[in-house]
Amino acid sequence: MMQILPLFVAIPLGAGFLIPLVGRRNPRLCDALGNMTMLALLAMAISVIGKQGVYWVGGWLPQAGIPLGINLVLDGASLVMLLTITTISFMVTLYSIQYMDRYTSRSRFYSLFSLMVAGMIGVTLTGDLFNLFVFLEIASIASYALVAFGTQHEELEAAFRYIVLGSVGAALILFAIAIIYALTGSLNMAGISRALGTSPKPIYFFAVAMFIAGFGLKAALVPFHTWLPDAHPSAPAPISAMLSGVLIKTLGIYALARVLFNAVGMTPLFLDVLLVLGTLSIMVGVLLALGQDDIKRTLAYHSISQMGYVVLGFGLGTRLGIAAGLFHLMNHAVFKTLLFLNAGSIEYATGTRDYNKMGGLRSKMPVTAATSLIASMSISGIPPFNGFWSKLFIIVAAVQAEKYGYAAWAVVGSILTLASFTKLQKRAFFDEPKEAAKVAKEVPVFMKASMIGLAVLCVLMGLLWLPRIQEGFFMQAAKSLQEGFEYATHILGQ
Amino acid sequence: MHYALCLVLFMVGLYGVLVKRNLIKIIVSLVVMESAVNLFIVMVGYRLKGIAPIMDSTIPPDQFVAASVDPIPQALVLTSIVIGVGVTAMTVAIAMRLYERYGTYDIQEIRRLRG
Image (cartoon, rainbow over all chains, first blue to last red; front, side, top):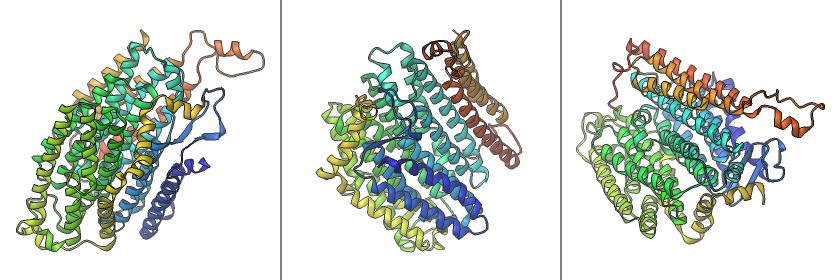
């Protein structure tokens, strides 16, 4: 039954090698293969909704409760991530068909893209710490190359900064994994949680601090955020969308949550660290975003801020907080991808990213303007769009947990987000047309289709918080994180 | 004690990454950091006067487990070295392209972005 799990990694990995082999001479074949791969992954992800299970690679079953091999785990939380990654990947490849006409070597683009997706899905599914590190590096290396894809001055500079900080983060994570291995003699997350027991040594806190710093670098939480506003805007628009939409969440936040909650054990101290990091990210991200006039840089700073909300939700440690955090993670993936694709369309049509030079795009590009308005309202938390519900429930969860100060910061952050997007919408779409906007035309059909699809999701995803779906989906996901060491029982048996 | 030396080596690398201005020196510092971690992983599995972890019929299993070094870190370190080489190659490639564009290896002069 769980035989499908390794295919989630194998299919994009295979596509990553196949596409440059067969598609070098024929760019349309690359488009077809890339889109088919992502569509197949999406279909597979939909087919496993509501299922849970463990797959032991190579048939090495655990003996007497001790894990021997690597396992892939599908539970509530990994299902949420799996659906998010596959949906966004498909929408982004659909958009890339026409957007990537501006670049050469399309086969390499799809190849790196597939590798990145394979790495992210691997991080989502794996139940083994070292395996998590390997997949994390696969996704990271592919993303370094994709940021530098244009090979112009800015792209290379941004990619270099990204690669340096990314490698530091990876080294910290690997160091922490080695310490945990030395302490427990196990690399399997379930095995680690069994072996650690209740009275940790001081070195254990050192390892957890390294995990938080390492994954924090990958997730661009605030003291570690400096690379993100350079790297995300410099990449081609579909890649910016992937990086902000799913990469920082999977490699940073999901991996951190999985390791902290299920492997090394969550304590009130770590929860407080997450709360502080989350609140700092919300405020610093949004304040820096207000000062930008490059549309993609603004969005990149908002990614930092919105990730703060997710971390804040996780840091509350309650069932509702984690569920709302995961819901916001999913919503952010949809609307931030849409916003980056909108920015890509504007750049495609006008050739600039500075929104002081645009203005009046509303009449020239009606589809882009409408979808961008929906996404902006969604990210600013205006009902009935999806972003409103997830932010509302993060704040409700904070109040329920009696963290009134943090709830207040979340509200302030949301108001500032609204201010920033009002400015962006006004300057780009509503004001009098300026030079750059006069020649603008609406973008081609696949780009429109992808943007409309995401806008529809923005409107409909609020329905996911209806009680029945929420119980079965988000609460289930939150349960799998919050129950902590119970995770080991599901995987290894009693 | 030996483990602390790995941490010192790691910090030396981190210092280089944060302070040095030359791209190549930054890359070398990254490699130093990776080596520190790899060294630590190998040392975790080391056992004084341990035997090679190859099972044969002459030793009973429980004695073998007590005497042999831990083979898992050796497998891990191979993987991690390969990943490290991949990242280093990528970084060097980007540094070369940067030199072609800017004509300098000085990170202070490579400043088109405001970040």
